[in-house]
Every structure is written in structure tokens, then in C-alpha cells.
Image (cartoon, rainbow, N blue to C red; front, side):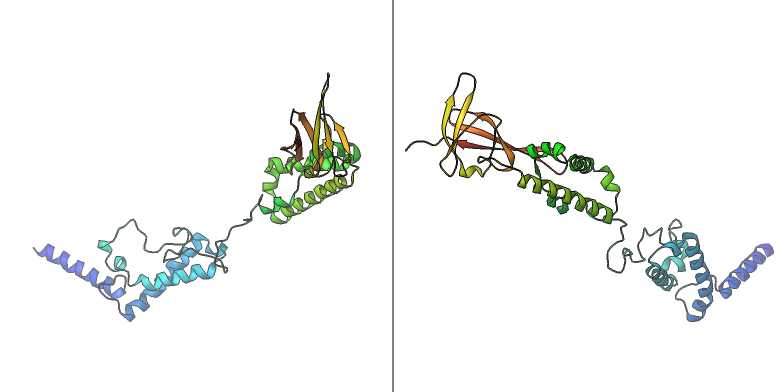
Length: 281
């Protein structure tokens, strides 16, 4: 019996010593206990900052502010005041990495403009590609002999914009610089096409009239009239209309015209038009 009493007294002395030292706070905290715990809390926060290398983060002010808010609520945290009732696997203080880039209130840490920082974030392959016009394909084929240097450059840029892997690696300035240089080359090719010699039939299709079909033994021919009422006999493969269209076929009541365009990615697209035979009224 005496041994048990001695143990109880010893345990009481230890508990009293812990309470006086300010290591544990029961119930509501008072200012004196807060002042004693402040140095210990500050050292814990400093350790957290050193371990997590918060100095490397851009938003130091927001993070330090978050830690301050956590430290103020640290003393009033029921989990801290009643350790026997808290979940031992949940840390009392969470650093920025644990919070996943969020502060103590769960808010994202943002830059001054209020947007999350994203390095190199800009939109590629958008509206800037609309400035890259198509080149009439029939004329594009002649560029190889007219200006071999221009032809090689157009083919090189066409491959870049078709595959896109190289363009994805470029920064904003280099990317838009590449787009602008390619646009200048395309514009140069279209100026050459506009100034190239043309036949009377290379005019808007709306201004042409199909007035007759000639059925020959070997092939078919069509009679097309221009605005000056002058007739022209044409065969398949003849250039006609704007943008270097080509007569693909001649039928009993119409001619089919295909206009091919070389796009910015080097691919060729086709547009089909027709001129119907004018019916006698």
C-alpha cells in the first residue's frame, strides 16, 4: 500500500512540473501560457520553412501570412488542447507542400494578377493561322522553276506547320516570328500569281457562259463565251476561272471545274464549281 501511494505522489509531482513548465495547456489558454509557448511555436515554424524550402517559392508573402494565421489559431485548436481526442495521423501544422499550394483556408496561392502562374502558357495554332492564306496549286507548281529558293522555303515551312512537333517547342516570340515569316513568303507567292500572265478565260466564273458542247470522235470540247461576247473553244485540262481552276470534265449540259489550293500546312484542298449550258429561251 505504501508503494502505491509513493508512485501516485511521484506521478502527481511530474504532472505538476509539466503544467508549470507550460508544455500542456488545459481548457482556455491565458496570456502568460501563450507567451511561454510562442518561442517553441516559432522554432517549429522555422523548421517547417527550412525543410520545405519555402524560400524558393515566388509567393513568400502569401505563404508567411498563411503560417502566421495558422500560428494564431494554433493555441485555440481543440486538437492541440486535447491531444487525447485528436487524430494522431493528422499533423497540427501543415506546410505549403502538404497544402498542395494552398493556404490554411484552402485558397490557391496566386500571383499579383490573381491568376495561377503557368510558365510558357500561350495558345498556339489559333487565329494567327488564319493570316496564312492558300496559294493556287497550279501556280504553286510553277514556282519551282520561277523561283526555286522560294519554293524550297514554302515546302520547309509547310512541313513545320504540318507536323507541328518543332513549333510546340518554341517560345512565344520565336513561334509568332515563324508564323510572320511564313505569312510573308505566302503573300509573296500570291503576288507573283496575281501578276502572272492570264488568258481571257481566267476571270470570275460568273462572267463566263457555256454556249455549246462539241462532241468529237476523239474528245469533247466546249464553247465558252466571255463578257465581250467572244467565244473560246476549250478542252479538259484548260485553265479557267479565278485561282487557276482547271476543267476536269465536259458533260452534255455542263463543264466541271476543279480549283486546287495549297494550304499553309502543305496539303492540297479542292473546290468544285461548274458552268451550265445556257438554254435557248
